[in-house]
Image 1 (cartoon, rainbow, N blue to C red):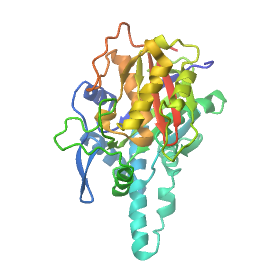
Image 2: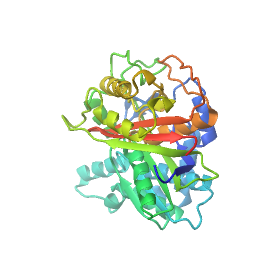
Image 3: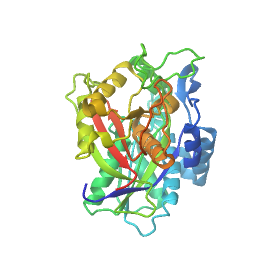
Image 4: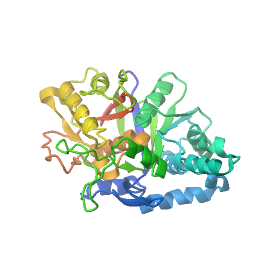
Length: 388
């Protein structure tokens, strides 16, 4: 890759907390953040925001009166974006762009307004502007007074890693010096849960299960996907940076021919292509860890692991994931994995999965490959490295 892309800041609000140090500490603990929650009278496994993250979001809501009428997906994005820009040093005078994405967008508000419509036949005045997907980046740009491009998009569960691709493309085209990329998801609503139940993929494990989501457990016999919520914001800047947390040294993307609306092939052809593209000329044995997408479903987990085996063969890297701990955050999940990758690179400590044996790493962690894929096989792989 010609121009190095530095990651100079990351921030999140999540089931693990509201600061990088708090999240880092949470990853050292064996407990999951998944719990039983009640949504409109029905019990579900889910991973809601941690108390500290909720307090951070509430502070955002109270900071401007107009924010109270926005969807939680926007509130989460604002909280994460504010902290990321602060952590990057403010970026004053920098030509900064914004690309925040979401798989589901304003789910809570949309359901609220639709219920009102079914009752009255009318839509409240703010229905359209507050439920359109584009209003996430628009409000982030407003809040931070960013004058550069403000883009929003949805490519289902690979959305936030596509935001990284977009930011890199804009910077390499010379149209921005830095990009604030992110993903935000607030899917813990009755209708979203009903959609997942219709697909028969949520976890139905009993209430005393220590790990309701069996992501990367290839011995499971049932689907165990669990939804989580939160937002992640990452600052990307061109070139070598003294404050770089890591560098993006490879990127790959691919799609598959659709067999049905949620299909992915048995050996995840899309992942094989995206991972090989991200590796480029780097030998497979140089990758130390792969952070998998593995949503906790039978087919999804198995197909991705087969793709990894195809690409790496005998040079299989250590595998890990965070979905057993924070659930599947849809469009934000790829950047939650990137946050995890930065923790691996900083601490040089592997974060294990309860269902796999602890790998023996023979050398320092230098290169981490991150996977994400959405409905229909929209795969993205990002290679994050300690050095450019």
